[in-house]
Image 1 (cartoon, rainbow, N blue to C red):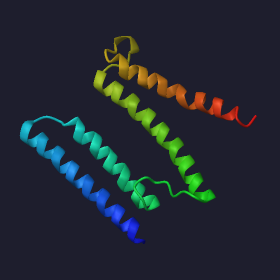
Image 2 (tube, one colour):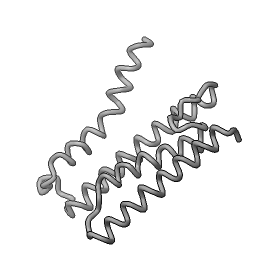
Image 3 (tube, rainbow, N blue to C red):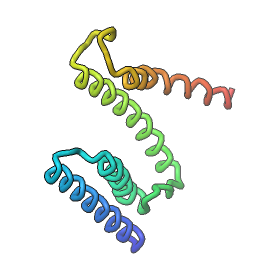
Image 4 (cartoon, one colour):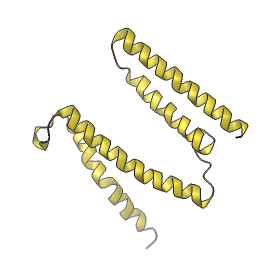
Length: 130
C-alpha cells in the first residue's frame, strides 16, 4: 500500500470520526439531528471508500478496463439502491401506500423521477453511438 493511499485513508477516516462525533454530541447535547453533520459525514464516508478502493479521496485512478467496469457496474447498482431507498423513505415517512394521500410532494417527485432517469439517460447516451 502506497504512502498516498495510507494518508488518504487516515485523513478520510479521521474526518469521518470527527464529523460523526460532532453530530452525536449535538444530538445528545441538544436533542437535534444536525443535517450539516449528516451531509459532511456522507462526504467523509464517500472519501473513505474512495480511498480504500482507488487510493485517493477523489477516486479518479480508474485506468484499465477492469477499473472502468467496476465504476460502471457500481454506478448502476448504486442508482437502483438509491431509487429503492428513496421509495422506502417516502413510504416510511408518509405511512401510506396510496399516492393520493402523500403530503411530501417534493420527495414523491424525486421518487417518480428516479424511475425515469436511467432509461432516459441510456436513451440519449445510446444516440452517441448509433
